[in-house]
Amino acid sequence: MSIYPPAEYSRLTVTDGRVEEFGALFNELRTRWVKVERLQEYDESPFEGYLAFRRGDYAEAQRLVREMVKSQTEFYSLVRERGVSMVRVRICDLPLSPYLVHYEMAAYLADVECGEDIRLVDSADVADLLARTGVSDYVLFDDRRVVALLYDEDTARLREARLVDKPELVARYVALSDALINRSTPLLDSPIHASWRKR
Image (cartoon, rainbow, N blue to C red; front, side, top):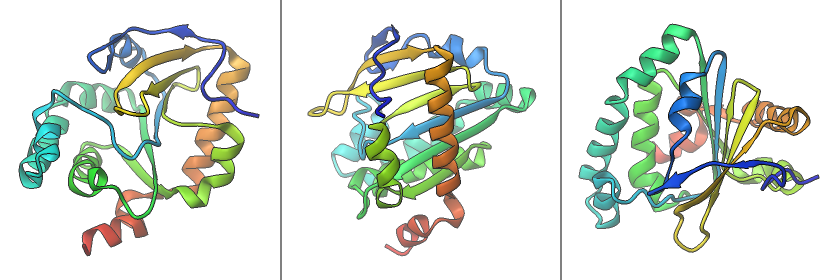
């Protein structure tokens, strides 16, 4: 049964492609944070790194996105201090999109250096889960709350964020997260990453 997009939710505030309530949700983290990324590109305008990627200046794009990730020292310090598990599952369509090849992979490598468990999985290997749940992008906070992220299909801009805290529905996202984690591979051990490095 489909769980995405959720029908029972509270709408969060999206401004300029960002969820305003994320800061408060991050500050309340105590155990686990799981982000599932399904789109093959996100419009991250007006971030200069993304704009560099769009104009084909890949070296500058990678430098800027790594800098941006590394600048989030307060956030990474907080999660380390609390012992919060940080897991990001990237569902990849193969061949990889230019966005993943020339931009986002650099961000993921920086995320790993900062302590995140970045995991990759071929969408073909989780096609059954995707078909059964209808899932796309979401963030799981402490196995108690989920924020479903809905993007405009034409522009890849975030258009809506839905907060789910109904225990029965959150439990289904927890089960899905665990299944995706089990079927994915840590970035540096992933055959997807290995083939990216050989390009």
